Structures are given as structure tokens and as C-alpha cells.
Length: 119
Image (tube, rainbow, N blue to C red):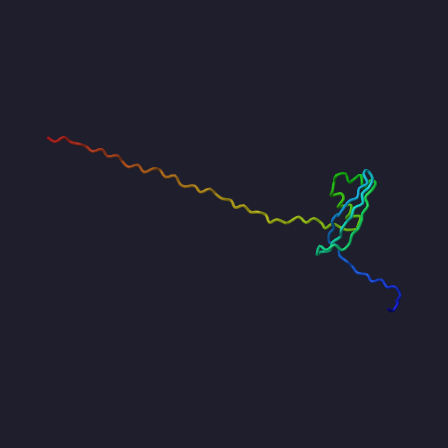
């Protein structure tokens, strides 16, 4: 096997998401977070560990979103902007009520028979 001068072969992997696999907590002090990194096919391509201590650990409290934001920043990621859907305005048709005309009742004249006596 021929010997060569060391050569760096570099490849680029695009990370599209991550999840938290585990957290090792030292109560009142720090946390070490295991982060799985995934590509667009949802294949794990790397594992990183992020440490949280001091004020950052204190700020965590019970807000899990704080951890997501902390990891995103610690690993140099950028969250995509939240895109609000554009809704077409709903046009509600104006429905006029149907009014039936009121008809005066037809009054039939009352004719009483006249009876004349027969003489």
C-alpha cells in the first residue's frame, strides 16, 4: 500500500432538524444534553452534546422551549421564520329575507234571500 502525505477529505452534510435524546442533570448546577442531528430524509447524521450551566441553567426553569432555543443558538442553527398562512377573506353573502305580500282577504258579499209571502 503506497504511503501519501495526509490529505483532508471533507464532505458537507446538511442538517435540517434535531431532537433531544437525553439530559444528564446535576441538580441546581448544570445539564448535559444529548442532541441528535438529522438530514432532510430524517436520518441521524451526527450526535452532539450541549452543556447548560450557570445563569443559562437557572433561566431554564420549567420552560422546555428555552432548551430548544438554547440548543439552536449553541449549535449555530437558525430557526426558520414562522410563516402565518394568508387566508382569503371569507365573503358572506347578504341574504335579504323573502317577504310574501300580505293579501287582503276576499270578502264575498252576503246575500240573504228575500222571502215574499204568497197571497
